[in-house]
Image (cartoon, rainbow, N blue to C red):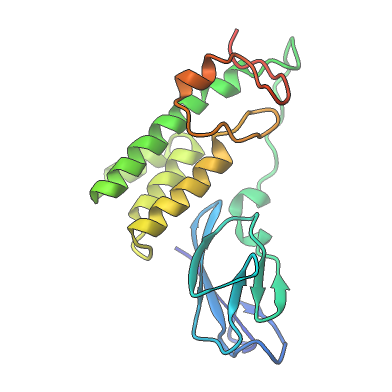
Length: 200
């Protein structure tokens, strides 16, 4: 897990030269490509997520972060934002997303399995971690969250939930599909928002 310190001191990885920012003000820990843990390190002027003062919080790239009153952009620390988009497959029908949609079955299954394992306090073995990392990116991210020693059970569940909401989406318009099991979503056969074809 990478830890990045934020503050006014030149020893930090993110240096904010502002009088309201403490020498070492906060730190972020990269939990997965889509989720970070941010912690205030006892600063005088606080750390804010979406205008709420926090001590410790799981965040995604959609959250607004302020150190004291200085807004900062953490986009470079979310690994998925640095990856080039995969080239699109040529399709007979541009609205056919059946192949991409089918992959969501594994995402839903691993979300439910990982959530139950976190709730039960199951210890993940390194072999399970390696096997998981070789599958869909979501699976590796979910396992990374589950084995992370720097966050507690509630934070693990919160991080898993955020990761799931980013990944369990329509492959075309990226609308979150909710918490319905994959079979129930597949029964709809197409996206109500963008009309992408999920199942033929």
